[in-house]
Image 1 (cartoon, one colour):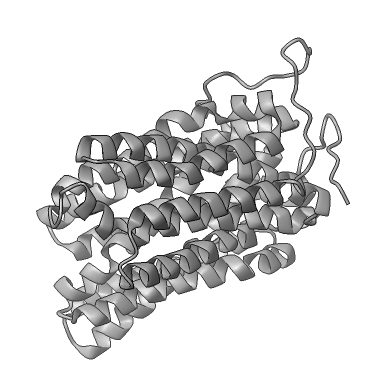
Image 2 (cartoon, rainbow, N blue to C red):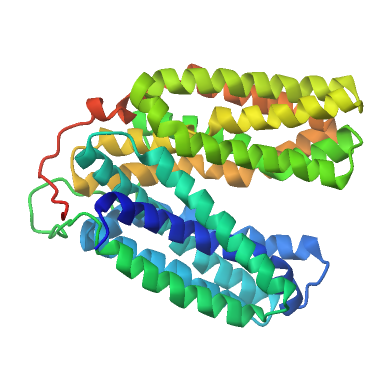
Length: 405
């Protein structure tokens, strides 16, 4: 049996692996449903996972409350894995959109459940682990994406690819979940606090969510537009544009894998302030490079800027989830609080591409990254909202949670 620490880390890696598998075979999916190079048409289906997640995540706290964290995590992540097979069998664009919606619903709710489990383990260990858990998600996505590329290179049918991944990930999740904390489902008759059926954030949870929103907005903007920025604004080739994205993604992953050690030493507030300052510097470099022009120095500055943005926002979303979870005083309300933060934060993933593109159309892409830099600055100023992410400031449990040896 896994130790709780590695059990929850494996669950995060499984979730990321499913995402990476899906992303790597999108060209096959487009061809399979008859879209081909019609990127605009495919976009209607690609937005559906976000819609499905945002509409269903507010219910995640109720699911965890009724089933218990371990069972809910296994059920939801298994549904997310099985959705891959459904997607591969979709014969047309409308059915693809429907299966994408279902996949997004399972993915979003599984995200909430596994983060609640991560916080439960963090409380038991008495030290920060949330950043490394999110780093494991990135590693899982990277490895699965590489496997997907390899299978595509050898022209393996997507249905075979996705069905095999579905089975493997469900099996791995079932094994890993045996090591998660034992949460007993709470019956409706108990007099204790129960999460509402539908979780909308308010008060401190809303503020934490807005901090997460700023970080995810910067993440989505950088992920979607970094390569385009180098190519369209600075006249770089596509290979150089890809380096900008790679620098950003690598910096984020390294920041998350090392972030826990920094948080343990400095605390969440100081960590976000220092990281945010680096992110602001990165945003400034990107903007200056855009004004500077297409020289080699401008390209290097922009790539460095995207790397600094990656470092600057890497720890924020894991700490936002930790702050929400530790602000709750029982297992019943933890997933509810995380769902509230995620509902606000993940909305940035929907909003960022359109807002950045709209500003770019009206003015320039450089102006868009002025807005991104301003949001990173606002995130940095709001760092005290994440104070409860410090395990030392966590509220005591009403009922102790047991973690198997």
